[in-house]
Image 1 (cartoon, helix red, strand yellow):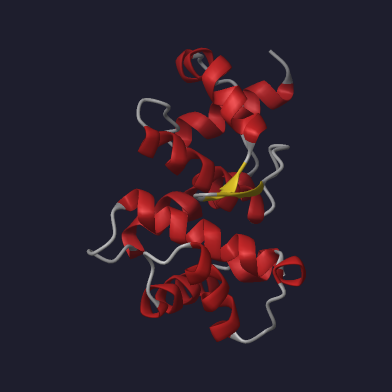
Image 2 (spheres, helix red, strand yellow):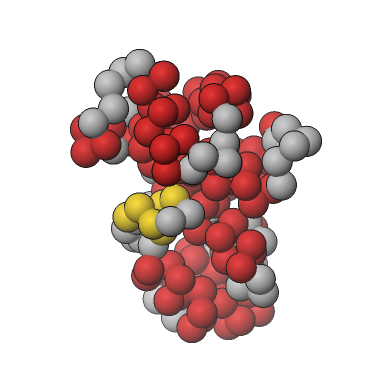
Length: 165
């Protein structure tokens, strides 16, 4: 196993990455996107897909290697303190979820909002939050402006927007 496999294994274990259901796979995509946006780069590139930021290479890795990575003992290896803190920051976002959203929808909202924010130029979004929220709601009408505003505040408070700026 090479270093990136070991890093993926540790991260996947700590983030409870799963491929059991569609929602598990969707949540995995969003959590890894959010983690990478903080600077913990696992080498996955993302593009926009129907459910927000999506990495085909992450899907491939999860389908082909998840069992081995989850069952391996990585106790002799350690991530940097920054990576550990970033994993905790992503995992703890669940505590900020509003009751009306399922966990998977909450992570989809956060990751999608951050993706558009981080790619403002290509999305033709200005620095106005209203413009950002409108772009997201055009793609994802299931989310309200209030939900977008709350998610934006959470991303801002937790340091995701500074990391992506």
